[in-house]
Length: 454
Image (cartoon, rainbow, N blue to C red; front, side):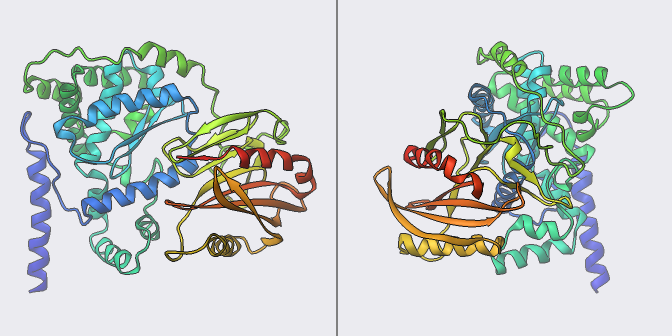
């Protein structure tokens, strides 16, 4: 009886795959095939994965380029076939022609894609293609197919234990990054994404044939060694012809939409710094010659729920859509020995800490945060008791902590600022070697004084 049920199950799975392969140009496109994940779990997984991806890439610190890609993305997401997925778009510093979207909607577009596009419609085509993988739920479908028994148990365990979906997937060997199973699609998936991508482009007013032109250009550039985009997006066969046939089934439209900012986007990309080469651990190599000490001049950062000013010779790692940022000089970020995660030895971290329980006082919430910090870094201890401050009219505390410095053989000082906010406990940690902290304490005070909440 069990064998019969299992056979029926396998036939059902095979049937959904065959039906999707038999799709003709112009026929409806919708998620198909076995998928153990709910739509809400796609979104949760994508958000968790995006947090990890942002630790592995360099987000472009150019507001115009970020807003430009977001405008194109907003145009595409407004179309009927885009559904109601919470898409967001981020430009990352990478000269390779590529882009990828995580389940649920976070998308990352390489700066090299903008640099090599011949027109805005080609950028929209790449983005529409990636959006289609999200809409058709290809990432979690691939994970489900590869783990027929493990995924259902994992999802049940995640719900019961209220744990991270990404953490549970990692235990199964499924992580994030270019080689992740979540971003490895079948040729049938690629064919579907090509087709739906042309629909999104056409509905948004972009000429969908430009997606075919873009693939033709990449094929011509790749030669005997496929470009990264083509390696990640395998040709399902007669790709350009299939796109042209799909375009032929679409209603006749005037494809005249343009933001009018394509040429400036190309100019802005050309001004971007070259990425720092990655070492064997995949983390950007740290430059040593520059002085990590903060400069006396400050420049503004505007985030989603807070703003602050920071030393002009430091760099923001994160983006304006995030409630968590790291600001540091590149030489202030140190790679742990043995390929562990990077540590900040000189810089600022600002984020929110979820309260352990409702109605906690500022002092109680701060104590909970310090306990969590100590749990992840046992060498951390309180150096001086908390001092009351005012931050943008709100009661705050500053607490001086100390721990082992990854930059020196000695200790570091971690000046912790905490303020209770609706999102949770806002905290800012100013990190510096203890031997140098007295010289830069005035900068810490200026950063604290600049914090403003929305």
